[in-house]
Length: 459
Image 1 (cartoon, rainbow, N blue to C red):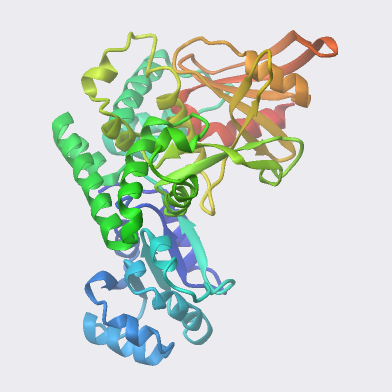
Image 2 (cartoon, helix red, strand yellow):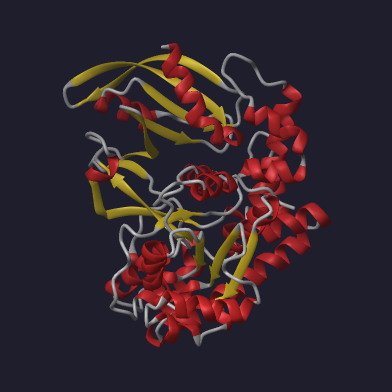
């Protein structure tokens, strides 16, 4: 069985003294239902699971906001008394009966002793057709994305996990472990983190079987759009869904998505897909202070897709394509490496994941830093390289302009920390800057918060 780190979050949630109903958000087939089932099984809990997509009549009962009436129906459906000790109520596919969202407020106020978890996909498609308000302050949200690279490693070669978990800048990685992890990351780029694809890869090791899973998931999304999207949106929604993987890392221009649809309609489609966690908008921030999101320009953004394996499948990048790159390059320049790092920077955030980048457009030269994050009081630029080398010109311009003391580069080199001194030409003449450059191999992205804290402590 595949292990998910999100179980730790569920453990914290269920032990809270003032526990609220928990709504697990995330794209379809990222493993929300399996996560809840495994959490209950491992802890000996009785799980009352109701698939609301299969019991649509419950929406009329939920509409009354009568918790006792709702629980009587749930007991009758499950055959399990609500009063059973150590019980968790799990309402799956909650987007199918949207009035259940309103009812969660009353579960919190009237049935505090009952742990309630809800999960749903494409929830925003349903809410677009309903005028009631969400029970703000009465429910808690958790975001679940695809499996991360470390979760993938735990499934395919657990013995390598310790080299990620125990990594420290003070203890070099064995060269053999470095090479093995690079190879496994190449596998992850194709397989991705959708649990069913990872499971098939572990069981069969077959690229063809993984491709079949990706194809099936893609078809499921197309079916979902026809069920939940309004009819006039359907063709555009399907086009946007298939276009996003091809424009990852590029500034979004609506004309590059469709010349046949008004920009407003494309923007609305992207809004829905973003809220449903099928894609993520990465906004340009001026990075003049914290929080970074307070300084964004909403008209300038790029996109990430929900999963790197799905991205490569839709783009037609198969195993032969990825294996054709020379040994010194893990993936093609740009988009795939940027998707990998961005997907993991987002996965580290349980609540409302967000990410920023920085771009400067000038007549003589443009500059762009792939991502900008914050760690405590620090603003930290993050550059992503798909091979072992690459220009740091944009990073150096950012460091100079913003007076940054620490920058991060992900590439294929072993870990390292360098003191960098450089000079660049600006409108004010030649300017100098000194900063520390942390270099990490792409596969260590999940250790970044720990390593940054280590560097700050040692400084």
